[in-house]
Length: 285
Image 1 (tube, rainbow, N blue to C red):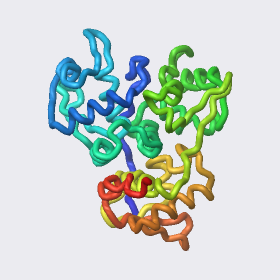
Image 2 (cartoon, rainbow, N blue to C red):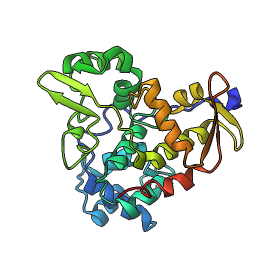
Image 3 (tube, helix red, strand yellow):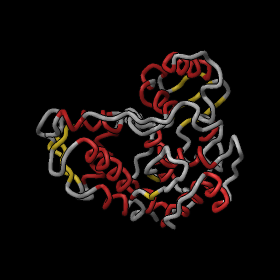
């Protein structure tokens, strides 16, 4: 099984105000994916000129969109602190650009959302809302409760902490297809990730990526280790039965094996995560 040394994670979440109050706009994400695919590099202004993403001297959408793309697992940014940015496509980003360039499908938005909420390379407010605060907030909560929770974990005063967290899931230009959060009056509701056979490769890719972060090739991992690595149930809000169904859908693709005779269950990867990412749209009608 994966060693304790392998299970240690470096926390590299985006700070709570990285977004500068901008939602992630799918058209700008598309522009950055195309920029990365061309192996271009440049300053924030250079990227703005090349992509048409607006920017300014002290504000703009290029830097937040770059950060969104990184946290969503679509791009990596070598030498992130350099003024010259050289974004590179991940396996996820590459297949999105080829198959769903404007991130219109529900599975694309869900997978990007799950990465955005990750404990290691996600974004602080998303992590605190969907993962660390999931039990505290519950599946239905009020905006004030969320604001107070974020203030407590961020050790600051309430006010302005929610930012675009809720609105991004309401706007068609952003992630309304995913709709991970819905707002009705004073109530905010977390929507569970759907379980569908055509999403099986997406579940598999997300799962295998988690395995590769915590284990060497050929090592076995337990489901609690998977949960700790990617939030398999807590981020999706799946019940035990739903979790088992999604796991079975991934298993049928032949990319993992699951030993259900052991408690907790033991999982072993049979292919690289990159192979699963390449196929996430293969079952779409």
